[in-house]
Image 1 (tube, rainbow, N blue to C red):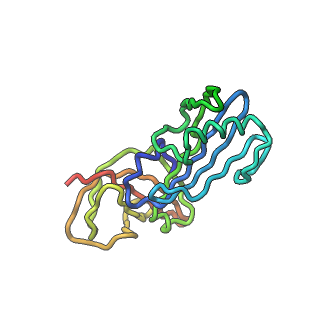
Image 2: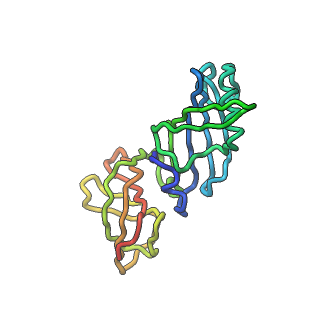
Image 3: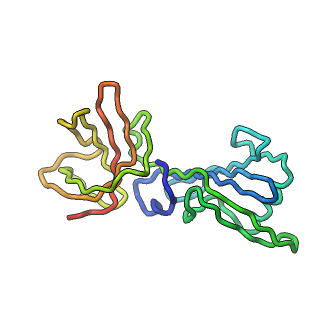
Length: 200
């Protein structure tokens, strides 16, 4: 799902991975930096490119100004993901390179978090703007922050089933937010609800 800050999901056990793209700018040059990490935040892939090269993933820059940006990132010991920065907001990075102070303007243009339970979807839409709600569940797992509940329901909500947990006679309430939605051709809707906390 698309998210504002990656750090909001760092301690969720259900997270399968993170993805981020940052644009770094200096003196008219733009370096695009793409990073992928596993659920623990360990970097698995890093790619960078400039405006002369597409698609992403080539790690080639013809724009010499991008190498000046890379030198700033090396001084800062940049590791590929900025968990605490917000999507689409500029921030500054200032470092001294060869006795010269350089300030790079950066902006995160893509922030995504992936969940283990996305396997229940063929092609889900991802959301970060659904309302937070309290829901009651009859399932056999004690829900904790970061868990996901996959619910499939009919188009008119007259019937529904939990796909990723067994049934229980004991109800429990949880604060949840819808983050994944998929609608099938027959009208059934599958939703991924991320648990933000228990309300029992």
